Image 1: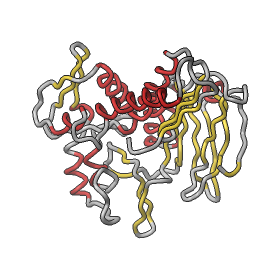
Image 2 (image 1 turned 60 degrees about the horizontal axis):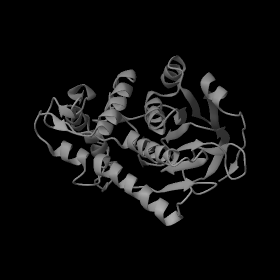
Image 3 (image 1 turned 180 degrees about the horizontal axis):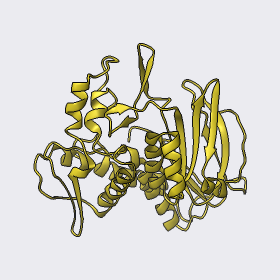
Image 4 (image 1 turned 90 degrees about the vertical axis):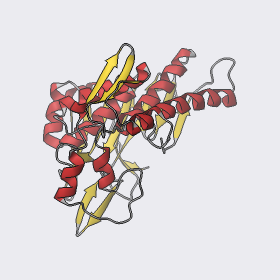
Length: 314
């Protein structure tokens, strides 16, 4: 996944030592990578992307489910969120190929890349589980949702061991249950979206939810005084330009929180907020507004969090 993970347990499971537990956890993460990592040449997703036919390709039920949720988000967003966006991500220099310069693609190049995208050209089958392209050159990338899925895999495993208190985190996406080592609910920091700085906008307390934050302030380049974010709107082929700096989402699973956070960031402060409100999504928005930020949250976010608001250095 190209990132780190951490698991916090107030107590180890019965009959498990830390080395044995870590071995089991690493094995599960390796399985997720073998299916959904675009950095592994022999992963399920890499082999599917190299497939230049429109035939059905057998995949696991889990692969179908993750892709199904992603396509659901694509429809809700009107195509702004799209797991077939990889040609545009590569074109803008944010993909698996290292960016050699901070070049802004031409409209013609963007148009050609857009011809290779569209979630509508992807079909799923539940039984037997399979996926197929309607255009041979279509490729998919589950990076916007697979980390959250990995968190859920580990959280479900810990629950299967009878653990009632834990915090699982992969690359900033997380899921928590029960009580921390302090004996109270898990406290999570929502980062202030400032490049080159580590500080808190606020803290929240959670129990049983997945949490994900998506922002435009870490991965970007500047050209002629304009910032180009790695968050690419698949409906336009260009990086987002609105003032929404980050979105934090709470959901039943980290996978859904992960996908929703990215999708709402793509839509922006107004359309994103209205969609989250209509769909009863627990979402917290941080909007850039000189000289600082303004925030707003949906009613469900307010209900699910403690309301604790503490700022400071991380």
